Image (cartoon, rainbow, N blue to C red; front, side, top):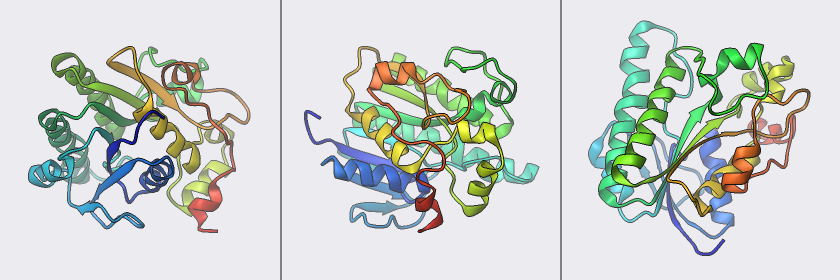
Length: 255
């Protein structure tokens, strides 16, 4: 790493967010958090909602890089929740974050997308899945991530931001999700451990890029069959996973 960077992590209090904050701090970066609740072990943390433009603008002031994790992290149960929870957080919030990044002169933006944009290919193949393969989204959550990916490229082309889209594997947030992964071999092959998640995002803000836009998959090592093509993320960002299922679940389970 050539220098210490000032990095804003939205969604900093979540499972991936806490892992990212810890890894960035270990590497000597200056980290600011932004979440709807306080971020553990982070003194510079703003409590706010991504749908609040003023709060997002305050959080963005003076940062070099943005890691945007804040979102409703999966599909919701009812049509009303789609309209009142999922879309505001994942689309309106994204608008405020991208506009604040542009206005503040942020140099590197890393957007957390999801492997769910290729959900049906994950289930049926062919493998490994490449970033250029046609999307096969699971449902509305994945559709919001496809929107994110598209507008990320728009900001890279129109405003010159350096934008990395990260299609993340499954980093479990709860004991129930750990049990789901344990019961399904395909899920173990798209598992993303918290420590590997932290390493990935640190690589994404540190890398010197020859392009202003890229889409990559981020996962831990596969256990049975390689479902995501991880060679591009190695070439673009220098990221290689260190762990495989079930390494890292002790973090989720609080052991």
